[in-house]
Length: 217
Ligand SMILES: C[S@@+](CC[C@H](N)C(=O)[O-])C[C@H]1O[C@@H](n2cnc3c(N)ncnc32)[C@H](O)[C@@H]1O
Image (cartoon, rainbow, N blue to C red; front, top):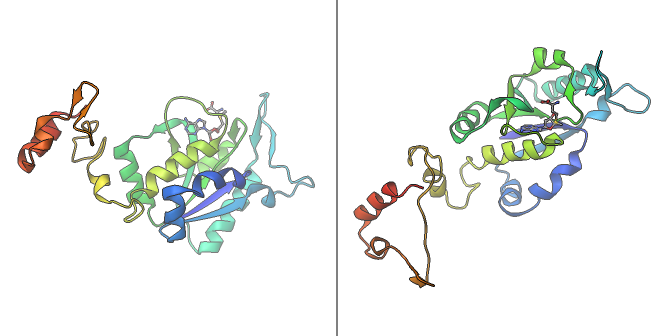
């Protein structure tokens, strides 16, 4: 999966994607992140990319630099690819939707991320295929939302998780009827006054599978 990120702050991505699971997956070329600094596409002498919205007090990202950046990526990859836009409103994510987005976006896509209040509506009308919200609350900027979305997508790529089985059977998975996962235990068998359920010590696979499905939280 190739992800093309158009942003004013590429550096805001570095910490999350330079450790643990995401770093290992990037090092093993299981997915690719390409950054495009939006200001590089501005004709303004000071490389500004925002301006005041008509009849409002907000700064919004102007259409021209965003359009140029998107067209630059289309030219670079020699085709039109889906364009994703993070926003608090519109399509609220859940696990089932992530799986659908993974099917639609698993080749390559552009994600545009912006600060300030909004972007010029004509960019949404002309270029955007998917407007995605991580849920109904407002963050100060796009970076966290985009990282949440990218992580939730790329973990579906085979070998990104060291144990691919954990994808199949976890909270909100199809196998668990989209419910929350069952409780899990490890040694010691008794911790304070709490004992590991007898069935998990029995070694009876069939009964343990039944127990798991009957104990979704
Ligand atoms: C202060 S918010 C802008 C809110 C926008 N004026 C509105 O009323 O919907 C700044 C940016 O953070 C990102 N963002 C904030 N909350 C988000 C969420 N729940 N899901 C996805 N993106 C979010 C979006 O990219 C948004 O443009």
